[in-house]
Length: 76
Figure 1 (cartoon, rainbow, N blue to C red):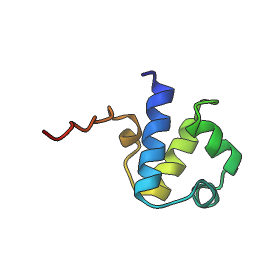
Figure 2: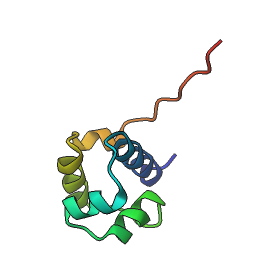
Figure 3: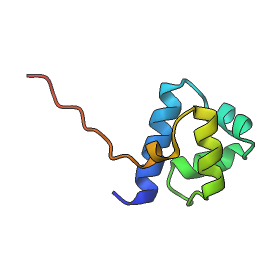
């Protein structure tokens, strides 16, 4: 998984956990909703300024967007 995929997957996971729509995240972070969609679909790269805005809105450390994704083990 490249860094763009990792960021996109974590952004969507965190946004979903916080129960925020792309539209609400975009509004709160003062970015275009279409840009949020492009980031989550891995169509575009994200700048550090946007990472900072997302981390403030979602109340997470910026590094959390780059943490390896934990795979859930199937129950036995």
